[in-house]
Length: 268
Length: 365
Ligand SMILES: Nc1ncnc2c1ncn2[C@@H]1O[C@H](COP(=O)(O)OP(=O)(O)O)[C@@H](O)[C@H]1O
Ligand SMILES: [Mg+2]
View 1 (cartoon, each protein chain N blue to C red):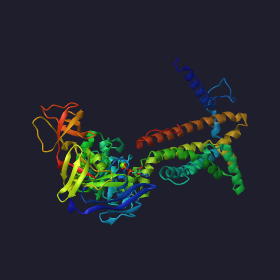
View 2: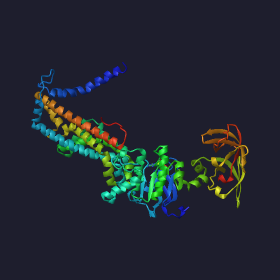
View 3: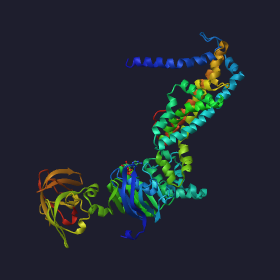
View 4: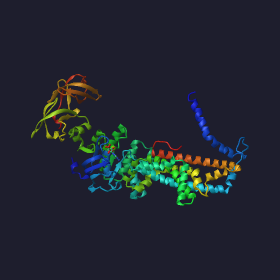
């Protein structure tokens, strides 16, 4: 059969990629404490157990605050940067954009350690705020990538037309540009929210005494009896991530369709 | 013509525009009259759009002055100028309905809802889109988008309407229909229209006057007939339609006219108005349009005749184009002949007599 080998390869690749994620809900709904086959029976008790842990809720609260702040700040920064990079020419633009995008390729552990050194050097106490700063740093490249695509698909003459019809720069931005890039903004918010929510290394280094959800999960692995609870939690997180990313992609595509542009990639 | 009596609407005074080192506009001086249908015609990249955008206020000029209705436009931003523009891409706001697009410019006027609807309805009616107000803008055809762009620009009753190649995205049939509609619309509203186009036929059909541009300069500014019959340079003549050129020598220039000897045609006396251009320094030649010469068939006679050989025949149904090399010349000239019932189409190699008239000749020197 033609392409048979390739098909097998693709199948193996998908199994390798997604099998662990499928195991997650499998054991989350399993009766037994031990994470091993055979499964012993269906139960939702681990979900109940997870919901009854106050420290877990604290971590969830921290994570949500961090993710919400980081996504709003990095998206706001992304709007300015994307607008500047698609619309204006200034000396050193390539270099500046390269520097902003750098955290995308820099090992996260290096970002985390350097941030820690700088913050300690400045005498700033570690808290949620410092984690937010770190997450803004790593989310901004993503928001810029998404928003640049949104701003680029915007026909420049739309702006000029609004201006020509008597609007000012500000009202043109509000009436024309913002509505047209709004799908991109929503998509950027959702993706940076997701990135921040399950980021571990930076949060681990910068959180101080206020653990985020990933840090909480990591710490729980020391207790074997807590593992099924973590499985349940993981299942919930995977479900949330899928919903968030799917809606991000939905908004990105709707934005393209609305402005009549061609699809030139994206994150999904 | 009454055009000369019309007041000036736009005046360019030695306008220069640089993009970095690139000299895009090189000393444009011209006036456009109120109520005129004016075209900027030239090949792609000659600076037509740039010149149009200096009127709209989207490009700052490097030196010189642009006046609109007697007012200096320096420092006046685009949203404060009495001009509106139809963009090449139409720039229809994709997230608004047709009515919202058309009424966009009236937002600032703070009209009552009824009044707004009424004005939008009128504008849609004017461009033949009655009843389409509720349509989503992205669901329109090319021709409809163009009409929306027109209505949107005209609803503010600007002094000048600027159109940047508005018909270039339409298919041939639609384009011809829109040409006629635009002319009618311009007469109806009486607003000065300035059209950018690279299509010489479109410019000839639609305009009261045309500025032919090459490389950032206006080569000739005249009405269509003058441009066609008395182009002031070989370049303009070539860009607008087809013209035959034959090398020529000026024998004398005096009170009664210019005496010229042209290769293949012989001596002729031309009126000074037949030499509208300045000296180019590349030698003189005479030119004439393909339709101003005729091939003579048996029994026909003309005052001025030349002998030649048919080198190429292109049959178009209603017309036949002949490439004829006149005796004593190096390159063939083109002659277009209407095909008349009973008249044979000549074959390649046939000898023929060509009738021409000195009145149709333009002298380039
Ligand atoms: N923003 C710009 N920056 C640099 N060069 C430009 C810019 N706009 C136009 N040009 C150049 O100026 C010349 C004239 O352009 P344009 O007015 O658009 O020509 P046309 O409309 O006649 O085709 C072109 O060579 C073009 O490359
Ligand atoms: Mg152009």
